[in-house]
Length: 500
Image (cartoon, rainbow, N blue to C red; front, side, top):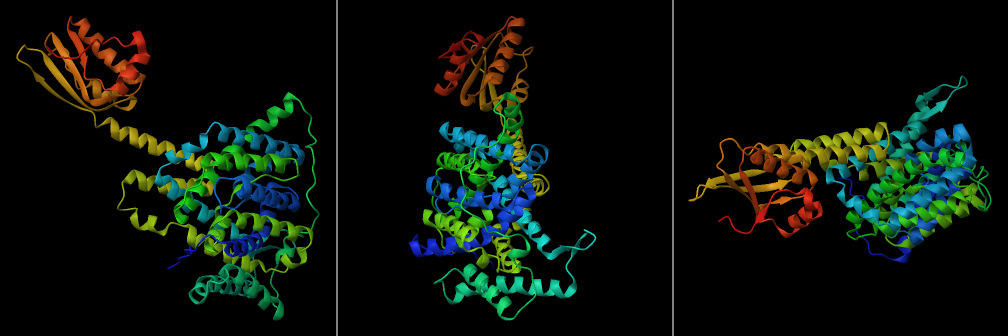
């Protein structure tokens, strides 16, 4: 029902219009994430501008939008509370350096090892997080400082404007695709609110977004080992979360646009953006899946879309704050609800009973952990569970066909991969006490992959030697030979070309 991704060609008009649309949605998110991190709204807005601009120019995925994100903000809040915002700026610089090194050493390619089930859990979890984040807009703080739901009249008006925004976004493309439906929805709902004098909250009720140009600022922290020990753990965590979210968003945009971005280039682009941002009083950032989906849905495919979004955001900060402050929060909530509907992989719900139980469990696990902790932990848990499940499955696949030849020698034809997970199954294939004086292990249909495999073969050899029996290895493939060669004298089993 909700086909949010329009098939459009890469052109400048689409990029500029989609960039403008994204910039309107960037403002309240940047302000909200600033509050989460415990910093001034301008710190988040400057980060959204600089990270968005630099990654659009130097990043590895045209059409992907980056800026201040909630995944990073929740980690930053304790650092800011304990040590102050200057330590945050220094941390962002170090975070960027780590990300640049990840790109230089080509660590971005490891994102390809993330299973599809983890990817599904990732997008579903983020969709839920984006949805839950919007619910705060339906609440207010009363005179006693208690966070409560809006009164019936205000809540009804808010919901009506949200549904109107969603209605325009969904149905306008059926009439015309000349302009992004999201942009029309935001402008249209804003016009209706002000022309009809409707009493609903706007961006100005969150915070003023007006300010000057960002200026160069060296973080005011002591340059000593104590400072480094404080910021290093935070920098590593933020760098990991930023890269995981960015690279997985890159994969998602790749899939939607049927093109391919450069993971290592994106690592360097993200790192460069954060280094610069740290020196310009910004809170750092990474790829934003919600804004990227808005951009792609609005027709943004090239670098011009991200550049336009960043420059429009700077215009709003410096000169056009009064315009952006007029936008009803309901319009932006409606936009984000449409992002939620388009981001969530509804097909994953239908296939849960049709795919392997481990994959279904991983999807649910990653989604749940993403909601209740953070993305990095969720992806790590998903990859670990998937890897263990794969190792367990492969460990049961190692088999052997045995026979005794005319000379009375026994042959074991090994089939399957011998690695740390299959060692016990491999050892259980042999009966040293009952076997004849000489046996041959034929690895023609098997692979020896690691030191655990070599140790298992050595154990077999030692067991037969103890019983005064001989073991010979035959038909090791070239890649297995390389593993054995690296083991050098550690590999005790003699090798033969023929069994005679």
